[in-house]
Image (cartoon, rainbow, N blue to C red; front, side, top):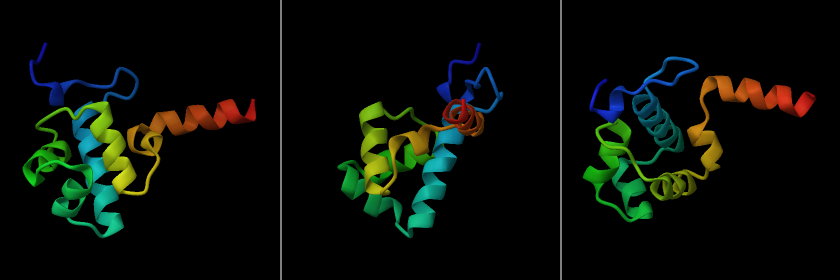
Length: 95
């Protein structure tokens, strides 16, 4: 089993968990038109620390993810949701 957390895969969809999260964080930041330095400042961390969240070279704490989502004007759930989770919640709401 790999030691690097960036190599762990979602048991349902097979995606790399940390890598996928980092890509979603980056996409949300770019969509918001903000720099890494701006988000890092809002979150209260170094730009290097924030960059590690986007590049999946570290696993951010849940409290850090909450602050990142808040800085991006997003709900934490949006940031954490995998593609299959959106389908599941739609089915739950209907049923």
